[in-house]
Image 1: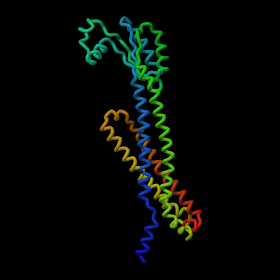
Image 2 (image 1 turned 180 degrees about the vertical axis):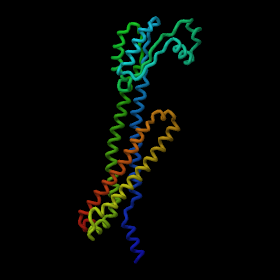
Image 3 (image 1 turned 30 degrees about the vertical axis):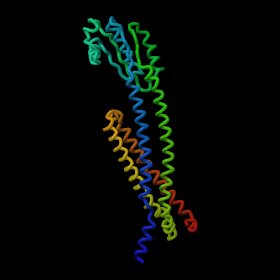
Image 4 (image 1 turned 135 degrees about the horizontal axis):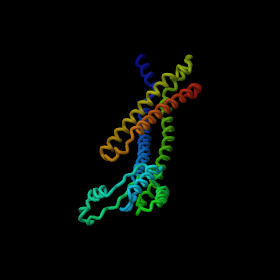
Length: 289
């Protein structure tokens, strides 16, 4: 009899392992896609801010005129950063690019002075750059302005890709809620008779729900932490494989992603568990079969 009672008690316990594993897999997929979306936005920002506009000025330009131009650029709201390149700096860059000796090649003629400008990511597009170039026309000593038009034009495509990934992430998040809810409800289904029996012997709703809700919080946290650990392992592995990805990592954003996964895992698991408990408490005994 005692062995039979033990077996019955074991059967009455819900199978949490499969529920935790299912929630972990779903949260892992959501986390990976979230990381891709966040890094796509970071990559777009880095690419936009790395697009350089070269403003060449006449060799005979006075220091006063040059300083006026630099002050204008420095105070402009579109500009993230700039670098003034004088003749000596131009010579160094010329030689670093593997070109022939400066003096021999150009016969002591100076390379043009320039100001290299980088725009803030939100202004690094063809329209804002063209508007900025129009404003430069008031400086007659500027001989030429160059910027990578084709590259800048493709930034809009990258933004559309990022937007598409964001929409997919939202759809997947909605599916995540449904999948986790169904997983938890299936796990609680095996516990429905225990819940009803406790109610029939006079246990209050809070007394019945409290231990199961606590277990739901623990299960959700465990599943989320397992998913977070797997995501972090993949991120660091990719960074070791492709070192350039390290420059895209933002620890605060990664922390936000991990916190979001943890919050989703706990909240959805808790809400689904509590809903199942209330559902079985409201059902009649015959309806449980």
